[in-house]
Structures are given as structure tokens and as C-alpha cells.
Length: 165
Image 1 (cartoon, helix red, strand yellow):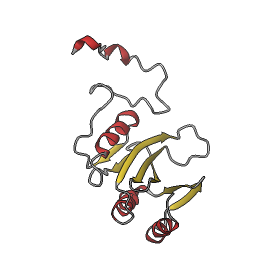
Image 2: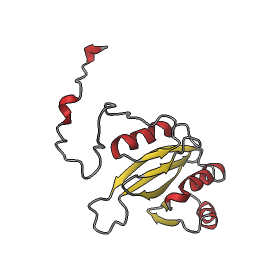
Image 3: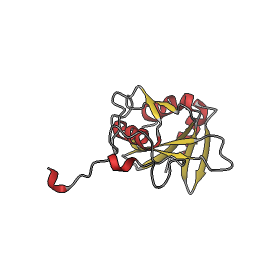
């Protein structure tokens, strides 16, 4: 469980951060302009040396949502199993965030997956390209406005079988 000292340090350093708690799990919502600074602070000053996950939520059809995409970072402290969720928001037409690969090398794959599935661009990422879909795929299939049956592009995806090597 994240200590109250850590939460107080975040609040003192970043007054615009909105911190909420649910079942002893904390979530820190910050503006996109300071998300990299918050994550650097958590790593360098609070000991969150592990990036556990980066994911995204598309709020397109949520009636009360103010923003289109919520990007979620989950960071941890391996020595005591603390986890903290950091969330920020981006919008179309160019949803962009700074990369955190300078903080955690493991973020390379996670950012590529969010780019591939949702189209969130990570500025400064050294190799932001498709990781799950073919390079020539045009869309981002986890967006809420992407049709469930696709847009007819599946005939272009090569079938891969085990005997191919």
C-alpha cells in the first residue's frame, strides 16, 4: 500500500494532481503537460522503479467524459509491492504524450502497443511502429469508433501458420 507520506509528497510537488483512493489503491490524475514530470518524480524521488503497464481507455461514448482518451500508467516498487496508477487525458485530432522510455526502458513495448491499438503518439519514442498489426494497417482497432467487423481490411492480413517457421 502506498504510504501517506508518498501521497503528501505528490500533492505538495504537484498541486494540480487529483488524487483519489478506492479500496486502499491510489490513482493520480494529472494534466498531460506534467505527466512526464510526475512520473520522473515517482521514479527518482519516491522509488517507483518499475513500469508495470501503460494502457488506454477510449471515452468516446461516455456521456460525462470531457476528454476522448485516458492514458493509464501503472508504476510499482518491487521491494514492497506498492502500486500507483497515474492517469492523464489526450484528445483528437493528434493525441500525443511524451515518451517515458527515458525513465523506463520497458516502456518501449508498452507505448508501441498503445500506439498500435489506440493511435496515441508518444513524442520522442525511438521506434514507434506497429507491434501487433501489420505495418500497412491503417486504423487503430481498440478505438470505440472502429467497427466490430472491421473496415474490410482483413483480406489483406496474411495468415500465419505454425509450419511457416
